[in-house]
Amino acid sequence: MNKSIHQACKQARKDHHLLLNDLAYILNIDQGNLSSFEAGRSPHSKALAGYQILFNLSIQTTIGQVFQSGHKPWIDRCFRLVEKIDEYAPNTPKNRKRIEGLDTVITNLMELQNG
Image 1 (spheres, rainbow, N blue to C red):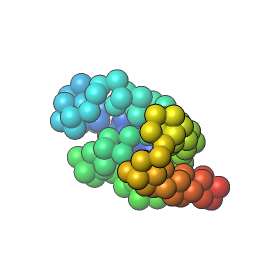
Image 2 (cartoon, helix red, strand yellow; image 1 turned 120 degrees about the vertical axis):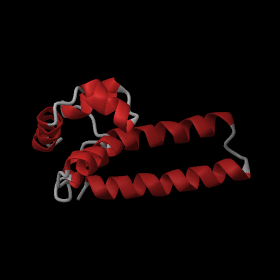
Image 3 (cartoon, rainbow, N blue to C red; image 1 turned 180 degrees about the vertical axis):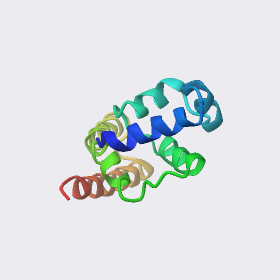
């Protein structure tokens, strides 16, 4: 994850004399999630967009880098969801469609991750 964009977000918040819980309240985001975002430990699209809008930060060139590390966990969760669907009700038309959709999402995420 790109630390510099997170540091810029945190610094922008501090430059505006806002506490972490102030910004969490404004953005309607859990304070712990926002703290993880500022520390560069987790991606958060709503936080990223919020910092851009509220503090006029440019994120256009860094958004791909911020979310690049998020692909692997999303892929893993998609595979686990497919397993859960297969385990509980794999042969219904609705669930077959869900699995097809997840397969497409997994393919897209893997292409993004592999560049």
